[in-house]
Length: 511
Image: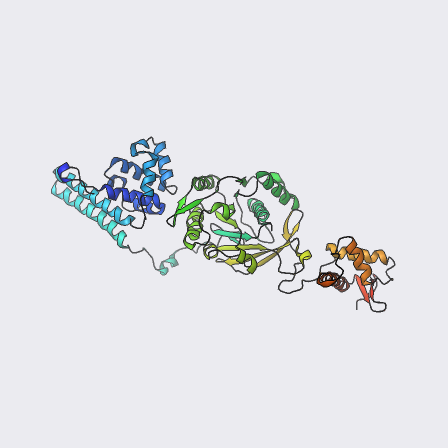
């Protein structure tokens, strides 16, 4: 309320000041009011001026909330002067919404203007000086009021671009997959190796080394891993380096840490408004210190303290929390996540709220090949580009697990058919079939029957030991596919009389 008149106190409103500060502490984005015409000295109460000054100081480098403001005041030796951290926390908790911050801030400005004008009159200021002061105060009030009702945006016509140099080419961390200074999500079912892929990606980005045939524009990398202990991270990193003959000593720009077993929430939500945690501020300070070109965050389930199906909450997490890190520090963020059950069954790797898909610039999905040949797909993966705002979506990179890391698959499986393409000679089963025929027909002329090949392989555990029914038929078809491929590769020759297979002679002409 306004407290003047009988008490002779200058005009002011404690309620308006508390509401303004409460809005800013409840919704840190409201701190724009401090920088848009509202000065700390506009607050009448000394404790409120101290709080407003601390908010303004923090807003120059980070996002203020009641905890960071309390810490700033503690460092300045002023925390007790404002009633302690409890008063700051109450200001935020007792404010139902920040939507009216402009109205409250304008009220604080108006009372401040009245106090200054009364002081000018009391000081017997010269008429010319008083006129200038009146115009200055009115201009401040008009500027604040115009903001509250909607100040027109400053937009220049496109014709002005003609006098400027052309923008630099679009910047990519991994060409076509991960844009620089933006948020990209990498989803994958549990156990498929997305953490290993992220580690491998971090190794290559830190070394500025191409990956899967893609150009990399690299730099320092920060990795925050919430599921794996530090020993496991080291195992994965050593395996990735060994698989590609990379010296572990060359990874001086790769910084990874395990947060296994710790509280890793970056944000929570109150009344649909995002609230940043101490860990978020610690992460931002780390990014500011290391200046990573890429920040890897594993996983969303550990970092996001909201409702996965709430579009407003998901969007604030991706755009305000993670996107804010990108804007303020120029880092790209790769967020690892698990798809929903429906996303796994559909093969799209999406689900929950559509904001998980719509609020990122690029979305990658690591999955198994779409084939019924479980054996052939065992060590194979597909990295699919499901969304690309800045590139071409629908791109796929076939991969296979080799020497402890992922590598491009030289012979990817054909997807979209009920029967997978037959295994090549270098697969485990094809080699076993070839060896069995060679054992039974060392001269290359003896014909070996289908059952003479099948039974030893079943006894050796290379094929399921099913004798009847649908499972036995599936086993027979698997072996038949291998034999057809070996015949197509001119490794064996099928015969009709007697019915069976023999090894192809080296000089045998192709039919």
